[in-house]
Picture 1: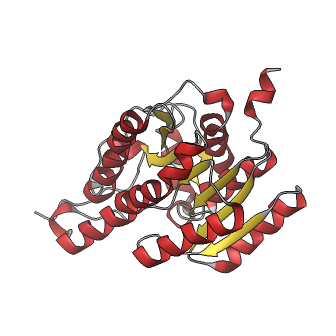
Picture 2: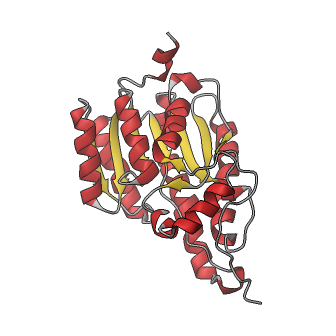
Length: 262
């Protein structure tokens, strides 16, 4: 009967950055396990494709084109979700990212934008949905990064933001317990559309694999499997934790040297 604990039948899941990569895989994993889904991202065409896949599984699915950094669009997203489904049981804050930039060249405005994208957007959505998540004893899963605890040149903005996501996860879990569980996944290098352009060079891809104990990069559905675990009854006694899903890495496997600019 243990496999039944991974079912989320009758639940409603909202996944940001849900059109591609880890967000897409997470939304479809939740749909496969029984949840109706709402996916949000900037491109409506990718959202439509995800929704079509979910509907083939017999799930209800809607895609809402949203810039999660825009307050009005976040509010409209929540309004759409509640009007369509009434409540949300699972929130996956997946939208995020930032390109490597040497610290000496990092403008304050860019740093602030990175923080809004990776931290504030997820916090504001979590806060807006907290009442319904509280009523439904729901779950929040934040997609963080191994760079939130590892170090390498060029990742001051991205790594700092993800470290903030990790501790925000712990703090919200404590404040909103026992009715809302909040966890995070510190994902390692995962083969997605975002990473793809960086690893077109086979030699660079090979270097990344060599620097990863399990000798390969991750797949989006492997992160999605952890999302499902944490969001489902299988993870019912887990909150305030950051899970490292990273192929066993204990040091950065990023193979591009970043001049410090000094």
